[in-house]
Length: 286
Image (cartoon, rainbow, N blue to C red):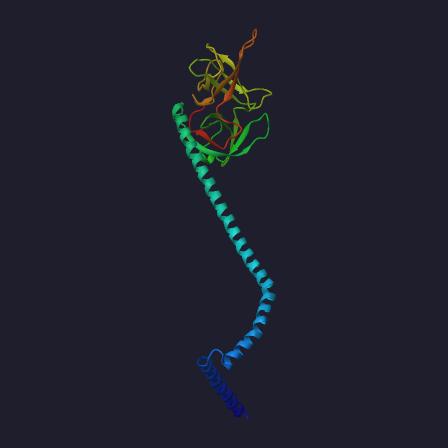
């Protein structure tokens, strides 16, 4: 029974193949207005409207799928663009940081060359914390005793003196700024000789006063003031190397009766915007 079914199926398959070949041969050989072409035309005229209707019915679904594909592609491109922008921003920041350090190093070399800093080893550091007090001006830097920093080391920027090391640990150090209420810097007026003590102005955070002045010479606005760098019999002992720029005379108030002339100093360094600083290590501190 099974063999008969197999033979029957094979016979039907052969007949269908022969019929297809005959129809193809007839279609090729007959004229365009022949019966076979007429049948094809009729079937096409019946099926075409059905195909067009199905195509129109499925168009919203196709459009929705295309929208999802395009949205996913756009999101992928947007994510890639965001990643590229982030990479470029990081590269730009690194370039700016490198340029800032390079410019700072060049200015610092000029400052050291112009000051009495032989025997001092500069250690560069970055500010990691700043005091929020209006009276106590202090910063914390990311270098410490493991980098050779010691207590009382002078601290500068490329613009001039900013303070000295007050406390130090292995990897950090606290710097007391010259605008701190507890700070005192022995200073002198460049080229004129008067010497005195620079301290913070009481009630005026960030301002400096040049007082306890010794020696002759008139002090005028625009005069530059630097660290004195010496010990004197009058008690104006220096804790800093000599000739480090501090600031310029911003205002002078004439003396009244037995009072001393008041002199206000504008620091060269921007003490409100400190980022890169340098500690002068290895030198002797008076």
